Amino acid sequence: MSPIRLAIVEDQTLVREGLASLLSLVHDLVIVGKAADGAEALAQLEAWGADVILMDVRMPGMNGVAATRQICARVPCPRVLMLTTFDDDAYIFEALRAGAAGYLLKNADPDYLAAAIRAVHAGQAVLDPAVTPRVVRQALRGEAQPAHQIEQLTVRERAVLRLLAQGGTNAEIGQHLALSEGTVKNHVSHILAKLNVPDRAHAIRIALEWNWLHE
Image (cartoon, rainbow, N blue to C red; front, side, top):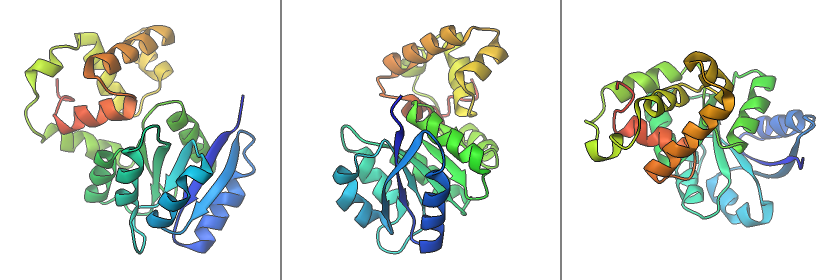
């Protein structure tokens, strides 16, 4: 398999170079670009040809949320994984609404970070365990669901979507629901088709924004 092409957007030079050095040692990752802020990232985006972008949230100039919004508006676009020291609710939800496929804190274990990059590249959504409960609680306080959309999903598909939003992999969801991994994959495909979204991150964002997780 071809290595995952990774770019790093981080304003602190030591952190940026440290991440690049660390992740370049991972056998299935290759660093294709680095930038100090969102504007620089956008300027180099096409040249990078990145599959996944590690994006800091707070940076001088264009911040990570603004850059993510512009990157995710492109077709096709790389997957964006936020990596930050800030676990403030506002940053978390702004990043997810902008199109980020994941949100991790910088104290994440290196192996966990590499696994998260692989998961995001594979179309999954990733949330740091420290922020997942708050995302779920916020969803429970959200707006009422649009019935015409939620009714398209079966009870089992809604259960799969809830577990996706909690960061579950296909294997973990299958174990929880007593389903094979292949069956879970089929359910996810049906969810994406019914909600007319391109990937898991968009489906999860819709579920969060429309308060579907309490169903």
